[in-house]
Amino acid sequence: MVHFLRLGIAGAAAGMLLTAVPAAHAVSAAEPTMPKRVAAQVTLRYDASRAAGWEQAISAGVASWNGNVGNVKLVKAAPGSRAEIQIVATTGWPQATLGPVRPGGRARVELGSQAVSQGYDKTRIVAHELGHNLGLPDTKPGPCSQLMSGSSAGTSCRNAVPDAAERSRVENAYAGGTVAHTRTGGRMLVDAP
Image 1 (cartoon, rainbow, N blue to C red):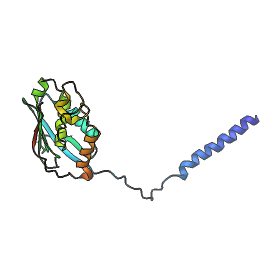
Image 2: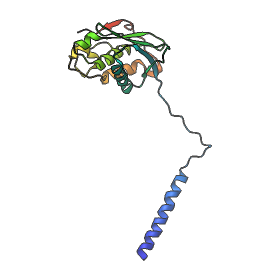
Image 3: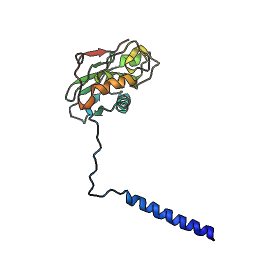
Image 4: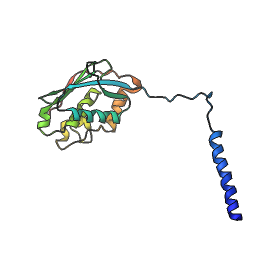
C-alpha cells in the first residue's frame, strides 16, 4: 500500500508539474511577436497554351525548377493574362531565349518534336529549355547529371533536375527578389546535337 501511495503522490506531483509548465511558458496576447522573414522571390508566368502534347512534361519540368530553387518561381499564367515565358510546340529542334527573364519581360521556349523523334526525353527537354530562360547557357559536352548538357548527354539520359552548380547560378541570378543583368541574355539558343 505504501508503494502505491508513493506512486500516487509522485504521479500527482508530476501531473501538476506538467500542467504548470505550459502556463509558465504561455505568451500573453499583449506580447509582440516577431514576423518571420520570407526571402524575396521573383515570380515568372508561363503560357503553354500552344504546346499541345507536352502538358505532362511541362508540368514536370516546371516542378523540377520550383522544387530546386527558391529565389524564382514559375507559375502558369491565367488564360488571357500576360506571361513572361511563351512555350510552344514546334517540329524543329528545341530552342529557347537565354535569360535571365525579368518580370514583365519576354522569353520563348520552342519544344521541338525533332528531338523527341530522335529519342530525347520530353521532361528533360522542357527543364533544359526553361534553364535557358532562367539564365543558364549550354554546358556541352557534359554528363547526364548536368541538366544543361542537353543533347550531349545522349538519348538514354532522363535527368530533368539541375545540379548544385546550376541551382546556385539561378539562385544568384534572382537573389534578393531582383534579376541580374547579363550581356548575353536575349539570344535564342538552339539545342541540336
